[in-house]
Length: 131
Length: 93
Image 1: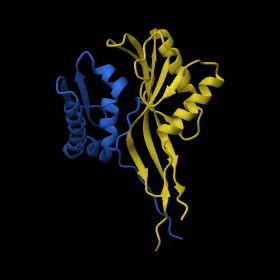
Image 2: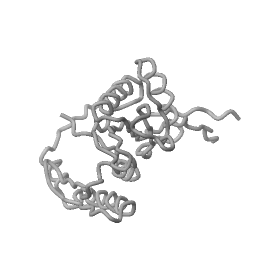
Image 3: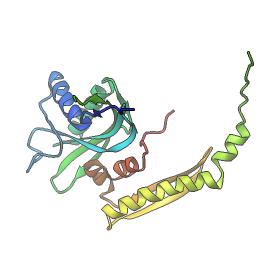
Image 4: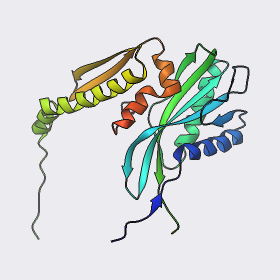
């Protein structure tokens, strides 16, 4: 029996693309990306970083569920939390996203950035590889 | 057609969830998560505590003033848990 030939869309990339568009539509002037821009400083625009912390669940040929962590960097903790809560709400409205850990603030003393982070589970369905 | 019946054995489930075998499996996962974090952060004290609620449970604590920042920036605990096939979620109401 021939097994299906499939791949899985990158959930980290999908969330970057989704948040970039959704936060812009919400009127936010932020950057979104995997990792942090080189030499980012608190006086810069707030930055929303997306990180793939692993894949705790997968069903071969069908789907994977990734643990995705969102971390907002901003000049003030109020701003970091506000953007993180907005991003969390936007993600919870997206099909295939389930809540995991809610928003929590902290600080990066190396850059004086105020941080707010949360995690979601992202279900990603397979797509066939054209043979 | 034969009818099947289901009777929940609450006492049996309770005993299973508090059994030494179940506790051992839970603590084993907690120890694996702690070992992962120790590998990333050798400067931190990482502690596993066993406890019992309605079932055997275990917690992993990273005792360092930078621990929360490490989680925010590096996903120390969430990635260690995902590597063990665990979703990290807030306790449901």
